[in-house]
Image 1 (cartoon, rainbow, N blue to C red):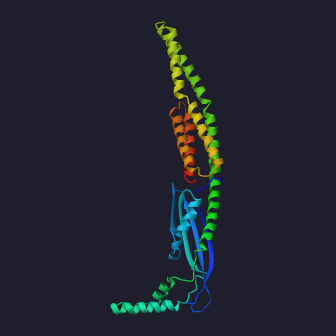
Image 2: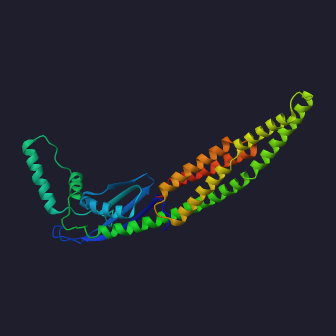
Image 3: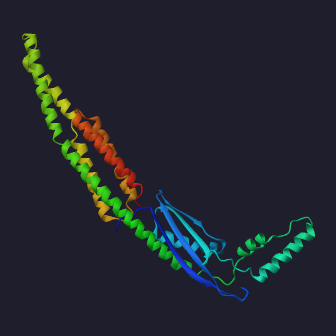
Length: 305
């Protein structure tokens, strides 16, 4: 399965003709339905809908379609109905005008000082009047599927880019780990040589007051303790294991975002430990470089489903 990003955008449009006896017997009033789906990263699946009143009853259908294919992300669905020619001014239906006039008379009877309706008021109220001749129940589901297919394709393309970036960072982390591995034996040998030199200097100053064997054993013990303290073999091993698991998850695909996020935290812990055990500037530099790469991975993993 591919790796999906939680970030994506898609839109689809559907044209329909709304005709009826109440359109003043003129040419059909064509309307277009536009549907947009936007998604960004989120810990869980969070759906929100912005639909016109005519489509509000279809929200459960849209929700069911989305939850069947999306697992995580903050998803917003927008729908809009507009005329094919948005600049054309449609004639108000006579039935609606008669109803507005009747309502105005009723209001005037109770509120004589109420302002009369203006032409702009009438046009606005007529535009908001429901059209009984339009039924979008059959058009919306396939349109939503079309937009959802485009969204999944966009999320897959973005997920592919994120996976490639993560693979590149994994490669760089392995290179840094390979640089750190031979440094520890070199440091241990340097420290052992330094302890032995100090032992010889101490023996020359004591003129035999301290037993040579005891002094040498003490120097070797301190060298051994130093070697144990700076040994990062265990951290390197665990880091390699986490990198192997990250590569496996990226190849597997699917819903891997949460597992990747956990592994990134473990990588950061190993890099911190590596830095705390650092006894040389080279190891410190490697630890800092690792943290930079891991932080870059963490930011991108937040976008993976």
